[in-house]
Image 1: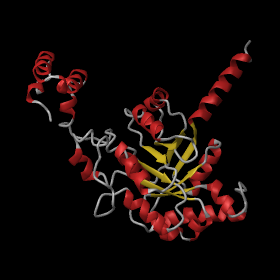
Image 2: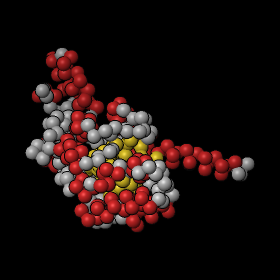
Image 3: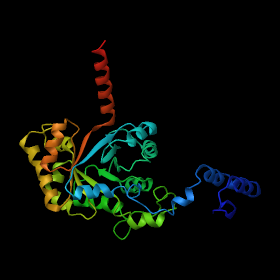
Image 4: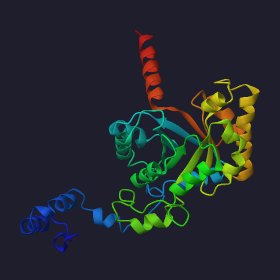
Length: 308
């Protein structure tokens, strides 16, 4: 409990409180000295640059029919992530926890590095386990790209894990995401609307029932996984095969008919990204952080070598 002796936050008051109250007040004293405006923050009105609400500009952009450019995060060092977050000119980013090797500790580091960015941070979890989704939301992620959602029931389980009762089953303990309970009421008032849930359509079974998946309340976008989808048809990476082309188009058409944005990992040339946008895919990834870093190193090195 906050001690009234610490209420004015001055160094002398803090020292007096610690001396009289003992070591139990030491941590709070350090917090006050290191962050003198920590109590004022909870009194300030929330804005869309606040990371509790940072999904709203993306939702508005999609509603206006605009494209939203994203990038995969593979580098999890917080200082490197912070450098990307400082001025990345992206609409969203995605940390891959299914294939990228990132775990819980990596997610925490990424969250620290991304703290000062108002760009939504999504994760692709290793599965659609409800407990995993709920725990990630409590850390403060903006939403998910959930893999292998192959049925309406899969989609319902995902959606209900991301919403509080009565819409869902999410447990109530939003410690970090509510600024350690300093803004709990503000957070809970909009939490159900300020999470963005994309489900991956990456198997032929999902394509067959994509209309029913799209009808599930709480699903915000359909994310096409072209690689695994092509495998499910026995046509791995034959993206120009008529069967694969038709499957992708069916998802795009379903999204358009149901009023849901469609997403896809493109990670190729700008020309292909443009082609997918013109096809009707609004959320597209344009590459991976480590790929950009490697290419930039090679390009700069080649340019210098050409001069010497």
